[in-house]
Length: 125
Length: 370
Image (cartoon, rainbow over all chains, first blue to last red; front, side, top):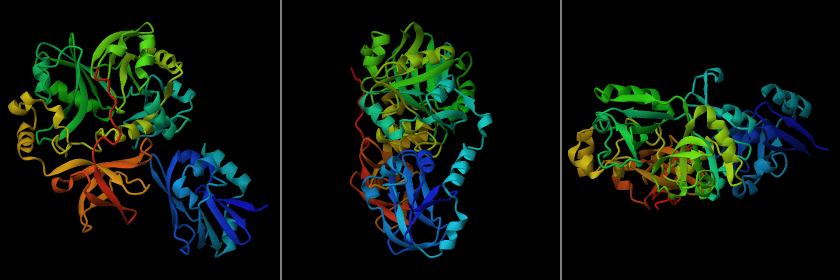
């Protein structure tokens, strides 16, 4: 079972054999509302932790998605271009944004596990 | 919005919004529902397909009475009220001395005077403007004890006629006092969605009962300000403070249809000289519809660039049009670039996105012209 990490910017990072799959959390998609557009990074782009890596737009507003960890973009979820609503329907599954080859796995240690993130979100509500 | 949530005013339907699971946001000093659990896309589409109930009680409802009310209002608004019959309503706007727009509004003639519905963010200033400019013997009063509901959509008439037989016979922009489920209400056949529908003034202490009664009809869904904005944008309707404001004239904004012939000729409203000159010679810039290429929304504030990449205008409203399943926007462009079909671009996140000038409205108006 791959481990899933969470950031305080409401992104999740699932590590599968050295590659990190990144998306936004269920809390984030609920806050955004209906997603109508996702702008994904170029494959091959290097992103540093905290960089703006993608943009997600709801009917109301555009929000940046910051890289929770550093790495090189290996793949992006092209399905979101035509069906951005997947981010709402299945945020932790089919609604993933992009995959990174991690440049520094130790950055994962600064992220939250599922229980810690659940407590963090509860504190916001 | 700098107000903390504690300072926000609440409409008479506040408890109902919370019960319905609305997400409340600050808007014009009020806590207002931006969406309900169904979400903006579903709410928007429901309004185009069936019937949507909006709480717009934050808006200002003003009654103007007194012997000189018609002349007093005509001194502030470029609308022809002399030819406005009792039971009819018109769209208008307060103009400034420089020909800008201070607020846009609806004005109806009633038996005892005129009834105005103005924007929430402008209502205090509008009331002061009226009280200062109407002249002796004319009174303007904010009707604080009234809520305002909007029932919009192709099934709005069938729904409301079930509770108030006869309202289906009102034509677009007609106004009447009717009893709805035993409540004394004031109804206008108008709205802000591009669809057929009604705005209903109801005593504040009965508003929740009426809202629940309407929501009990199977066609009706509660719809928030988020979808109200996307609906009006698709319908090409201006949002005050965004598409029109003190720096835009009615001619630039393409609202000259709301200045009737006699008023164009005679003037007699603030900024008449500026507006009459633009009516004669045309304005240098115009409000236009814009269709972005692709799916990325182009939002308010984005610079509009010509083919050489030079900034030539600005987007004043923009977002995603759920009925068009495409982004839509409005903005101002020089008259030479304002013809539908003209290609321009918008600067979004330091990238240039193609835009085409498009006819307004994006979605056809489905008003009941009777």
